[in-house]
Amino acid sequence: MNRIGAIAFLFLLLPSRSQAWGFFSHRLINRLAVYTLPREMIGFYKANIDYLTDNATRPDSRRTVVPGEAPRHFLDVDVYGDSAVYKLPRSYADAVAQLGEDSLLRHGIVPWQVARMKGQLTEAFRTHETDRILHISADLGHYIADACVPLHATHNYNGQLTGQRGIHALWESRLPELLSSSYDFFTGPAPYLDRPTDVIWAAVGRSAAATDSVLRFERELTLKFPEDRKYGFEQRGNQTVRAYSRDFAREYHQRLNGQVERQMRLALRLVGAFWYTAWVDAGQPDLDKLPRQVSAAEQLRLAREAAQAPQTSPAAVPGHED
Image 1 (cartoon, rainbow, N blue to C red):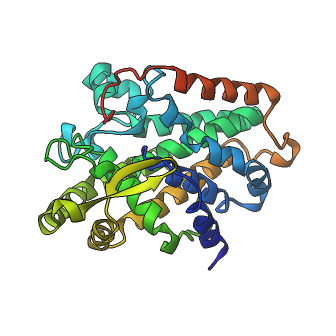
Image 2 (image 1 turned 180 degrees about the vertical axis):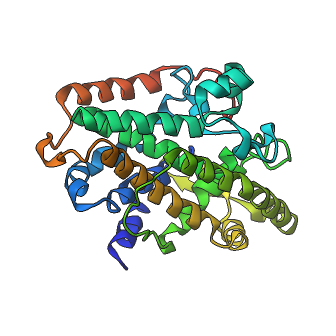
Image 3 (image 1 turned 135 degrees about the horizontal axis):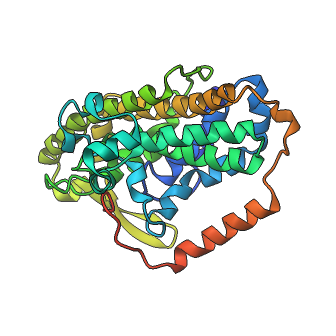
């Protein structure tokens, strides 16, 4: 087993929850992306790998407490038509002018969010701000990974329109948690992206193109499995929870023919590539001269943010809240 595979295996031993890619997958993607970076960056990022891992899921924790957070995780491509990824404006200002901000926030803004945060990360590198570099890197990794999830590219994001409710957690949480120890996560060095905005739109387009198979294979497989074989019960901590059975999950995974593995590998490659591209565009600052850990102020901010979420009642958010 190579080094990246060993790290992935160790992550299987960690507790997880089912949100977005799943806490397990988001953390794994950010962590493995560090190992795609060049020598000039990897020392700084490895010194902060636990920060990047632990905070990979922070945007999900903010979804119900921060206004405007929820739409940053998805784009309902099908709402805008089959060729939407080619026709929608790349500039967010142009998109607002053409479609209206209410529509954009209802149907998601993930590619525009990724492009915006790439600019923010470039600026953080230029100004040599350790806290902002790490804060933005962790969040940017999350949104890039979300853009690589097929069910983040459709209005039928949880199969709620086709009687397949629960498929979201099956694809992006259950399958990686059960089967990713056998995935090949080696992607090679992070590439420089000449046109990062086009790259993230291409990733969303690839996700949208996969939604048909994601939904169709689950629907076909459900016809084969009676209810008591499709689902089972497992002990998670102190709770007994209903979950897709291992047999159903494995056969679904087989029908998808490596799709989840390919999308996870794409996600971690793009996360490293966006970090690297932002650093290059900032003039390749010497990261060895920066503090190797976040400040006390950043630690306090994170502690306050973590304390706020459990105490706040979930608020209604537009889109993909199921």
